Image 1 (cartoon, rainbow, N blue to C red):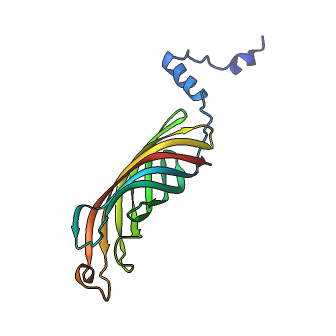
Image 2 (image 1 turned 90 degrees about the horizontal axis):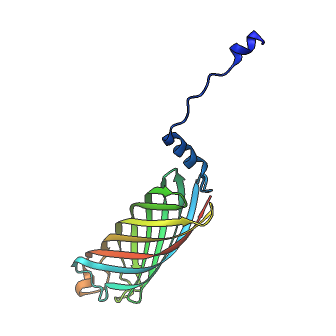
Image 3 (image 1 turned 180 degrees about the vertical axis):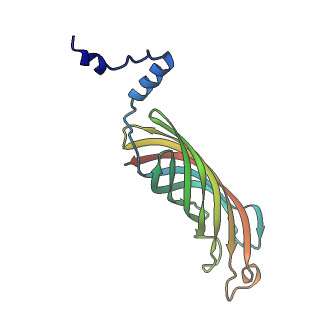
Length: 203
């Protein structure tokens, strides 16, 4: 026997415990999703918007709340389990139209092909087609929270559902040449909620 071969022999590895074997098996059972850096998704929702749910001071809008459809589109970056990016929402309600331009952040909990996520959003909101004189505008801030789940059909495509609740802090500037309530500024604090389905592209 070559004496040098003895010195070149590798030390014996200790046997793996049951826990180590389970962990290794979990690592090998890849869901096929891989790393994700960019996302874009959109949804269709049932939406409620109440511009004066909690308070109203000279808002001057006859129909300030309504239930109807909503649509949204968002995109952004994903950093492991964190996503961040902008989202646009549009609610073409029969009483008025509501637009929201928000930023959002979400924490994701990946479980195989499923993502459970939650996080806050906030930004700018404004309403149009109001039951008021043509020069009247209502705009302000929105702040809310979102929760949802996505199922990855492939590593690049997902379907899921989401729900959201939010507060509106709105103002109505006075209108030049108007009398009564529209001659002074108005404000309100409202509430909104939505729930629906969405599809996503992941790269």
